[in-house]
Length: 555
Image: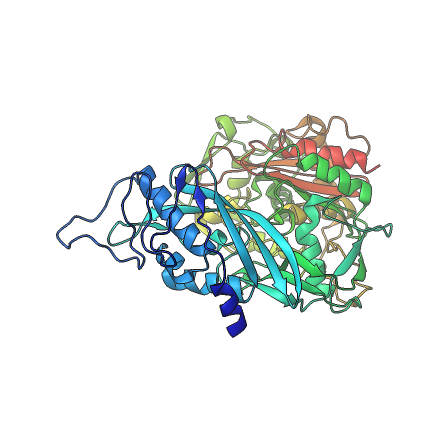
């Protein structure tokens, strides 16, 4: 510890540059005051220098306040003056702890922090430094950003403290540590035995991290020396894995074979790259093998771990429930009014359409909300929850995929929220893995838990469902999805998909979003897939083409 402190004390104090504003250290080695464009001296300790009679600062931050605060923070941090940098934030205690660990635990030195162009209160900056450990060193470079806000109580401008200021992937409670990795690396292989890398498949970063965390100790590898993010309680609860940022010395990896199909994975990567906020999963219904998983955003595996309202794709599960209970039959008349009120909420269809004297098949194909909501008075609060758990294996938190996943949630609700859950709103939460599994269950007639790594590798027990749908109910459900793929809201997307097929579209409203999340789930032959495009709009035109393209490319 003493050696590291001495080394920190010998750091050169190069000022950080913020646009055209240059911080000039006054008084030699002292931190002193800065000569700033449009500003005066800045206090070191974060205390106000104004008199008690002055008003608390209010109103929007000026450009000078933002630049001077950012300059003060970045220059102090770059110079190794942790307490002075922390004093420029609105949480000095937390900032001191993480910035100290940055030097002492992460062993990052020789920092150069270069600010970019200010946008309001936000200032992006680049970080360049060296990670050193026991004589080994490697350069480190990444981008980050800070935001200047008015401090509560006195209105003084301060950097809004959050761990992501230090590194964009850090969450509350996470740590940066350099040393011998506790978990040996793994070489992940596709189903053909070739190595999976993020260079070839950019979406797989979080998947590879998850495989290492679960199988690193079991695969026979040896740990190397790395700079890693060690996740805290909050991140672990969110099922985020520890992450390697820089490898100083190579470990010896073990090997783990996955079920991923290289051609389908490449196709999935290409498809999601076309749209922001897109995620997709492809399964083999006859086995449960995961053949592809891809996200256009690579920082979080929405495809496996997302928890989003699935919108009308949930009607596949709800339809199975209504048919079993005798509340709907595909060729029988079924109400689809413009509106239906239940539990104090007034529900309506997209564009307030109605279907007069239509069948349940017509309502499913056109995705009529009120056709499902109108059956809420006939259902018990826990009916949908039990259907999802018992038939589709969802919402029990017992899937053993091989990497962290969210297994869907269909909570027991009452009155209006229960009715909303019938159309995939309310408290229902899913991700593309869950909804691909729903289509796979319809296609095969039985729930098979999806998996990325064969259970034969480690003897883990895959989840099972307690019952299957009757032959009659299953036949109707397949016909509903087939009709929708040919003549309903999924027809345009599925036009180029041949063979035995079925599909369902969905659009999920989200508070604060102008456009809904677009969903699509479908099957063709022994393939099932589901996708979501967040803030994309209707599922048939956003997620639909992605899913359809993968079903076609899968042969």
